[in-house]
Image (cartoon, rainbow, N blue to C red; front, side, top):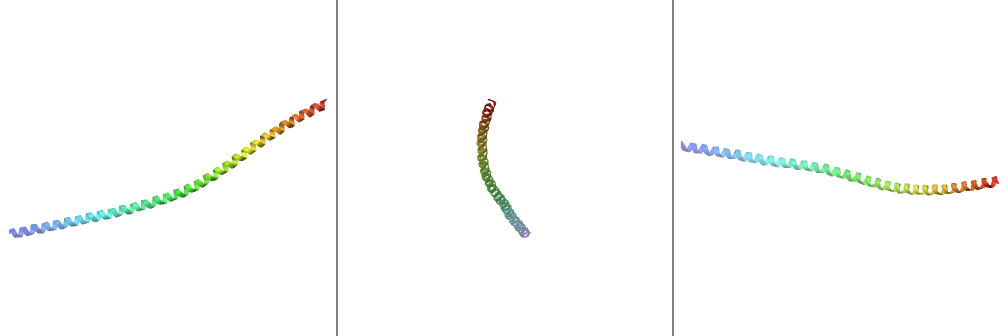
Length: 111
């Protein structure tokens, strides 16, 4: 009868609505879970990047210290080179004077 058909139609609609609600709930749960997974992945990536950043900061600090030490060593080496160059010039001057004195003494002996 018509009443039975109407009741069956209502039940079918109700079941369909429940199925849609379940599907909607499942979709929203999937979305929440997916977002939670994405958040977890982003947290992991952030931790990895922070660790990498700390390592780079430490490496940068070591390299800066090494650079400062190298600059100091270079300055000391340049001072030493300058000193040695001046010492060589003084030695060459003395050598020239000694040769002139030798030549003078040779001429005195030859006379």
